[in-house]
Image (cartoon, rainbow, N blue to C red; front, side, top):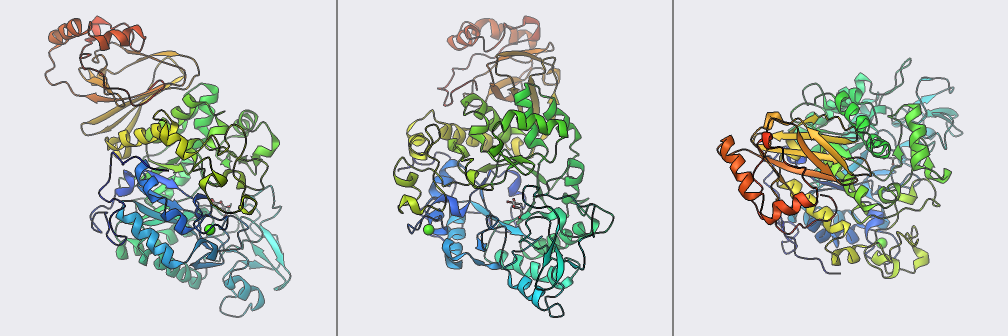
Length: 625
Ligand code: NOJ
Ligand code: CA
């Protein structure tokens, strides 16, 4: 499989030596994460270098060129630490050891160096809240209550405490307490009963966790995705989530990281309502720099299926401003189920009804499916979702395999169906591994629609119209406009409820995004008077659209179509001349074809339309954009 030469090649190329960083000097780019495109990649599922059927760090090393080519700025590696793997590695049994089947610390160092030399950063998961019950701390705690680890976990004589805390893994757990036959006490756990929660009241626990964070920071990682942080502390009479002492501890972590490790980022996983999530940024941006925007994610799916922008508009309106040095993480799918905790009961039923028609698709309070199958593999809808991912406020966090529209396998247990091996080629094991196919840690997706024989990187590299090439183009377009990462967000309403439009603004960098959430063609009239005299230039083809005037700006969109326009300032805003321009240029082939195709509505002469004179470059994309 050969990769085309990266067009938007970042400073580092594969030719640089592993320890030569193509990143700016430490301390010089503290807000890199605001412009970054993140990519979540499971070590276990990406590439197998030693033919044992299990992805590993060296396998990933061999795929960095691909990720650089795609335009990824920062990798996010879910846990690759020692673990019995009863929760995909989120059940850690040693915070500073690599799971042997993934490689060792030397492999990890090489991976970091090689990523940095390609200009890519890397954050890793850190599971603060709990460990595996196989962790030596737990083993010591249960067998020696008076020993140094006796207080490392939350123990009680009965299971009645903290009764207001909800159960998260409702499919498998009936209580947050489990009796330990060794210590003859109950231990507290917010997740699986093999994952005891650490006792953060104990300063020794805090120290041990901070030591482990330092261990990885010293190796040069660029930050952490902090797993399950709302649950660090417990307090009777509360729901044991988002407690003030949890925030205090996170602030302490941030202080240490800022003081000792410049330019690192803390991205928190707090599956909470916007008003609660923003607390994780701290009042002055002194806690986590990033937080996932959990509530917007299911609402994208809801809005598109309902063909109504309101689910998105409402949650964006409810999203408080965040401190200047902070950023949202926007995502469509990840290694977990599509969680439906941040929606109402009625909305959850709707989502299950629409997106989980087979009961096997449900998991806990969510839906265990990948993006492409959720969207019935409809290319226009996939592109629309991707466009939203790349244009809503925040940094996009992609999930491996979604760039080629990988499918899932609902017959696998837990969430494994969305964690199957990456599909590189139509060859044995999808090019993921040369092992005996029966030895794969998880079977490759092999159904007729999404199977590796048809859905794979190699096939999509060959086709300039593929989803993969399209996403790469959109990422590179995004990167040409810092406003996508750092600009303000203002929705532009319209009478057509199926169209979601918004403006992203950062100084002179102004981008208008118009999204048709309906499967049918739609017209929309936008009040763009604030931009009177500006010319919208469509970002993928650089085609100029009619100049904005004082009357409603009319656009038509194909089903699930969208536009990204740069709004470029008028050079000399002389209205009469502009009208003349329109007259003279309207006969140009570009203008003519736009009109004939109905891409622009008949120009309203009083709106001062103009500026259609530019020759359209070959549009590198397909579909409506
Ligand atoms: C959040 C992780 O994303 C999920 O995969 C895991 O099961 C839980 N934390 C519990 O560890
Ligand atoms: Ca392997």
